[in-house]
Image (cartoon, rainbow, N blue to C red; front, top):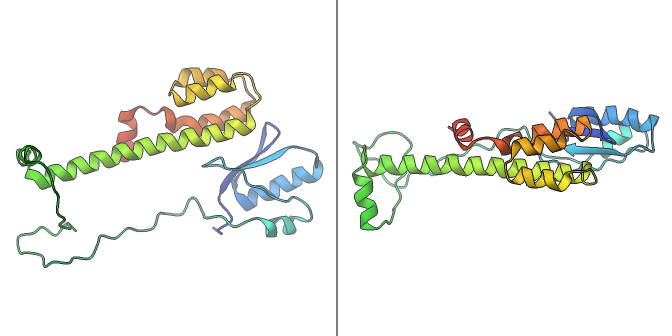
Length: 211
């Protein structure tokens, strides 16, 4: 996949007209633009809801050549490698990629850690993993809220119930949110439900996904 082919979605007014890789969507939207050049056409990053500005003048090839370059949002994250060892590994140290670091805690903290099954090291690793999962879940919820609100503001900012729906989104009131957006154009509501879904996940379900 080329750099410019991030996943996106396009609307003509409130009607969804294309979704998928950017260049494929641009070809479809160009045909709509040529048929109805006065239409209000919006193209969004399907993940973040950021708008993508495209100059539709000229031929399809000219339009595609003017598309800006974007990082591929579906690309895998850069591989993270553990720091190189700076000390020799003793004969009794397990070969788990463990890196020793100094940790400063109060005596009562060490006392509690040492009383846990497996000792302080095992307990600390478990606590770190729990914190990582909780932070990941919170980040996913925030990103879903931000993307949903960004899309709502552009596509539904003038519709009845917009402010109430926004409050329901950030309050994680799914039933109220869906009841309000059900009154909006079908394609707008369908994409918005998909965007907002992670914002309404129960904490237990989000944590299980991150496990």
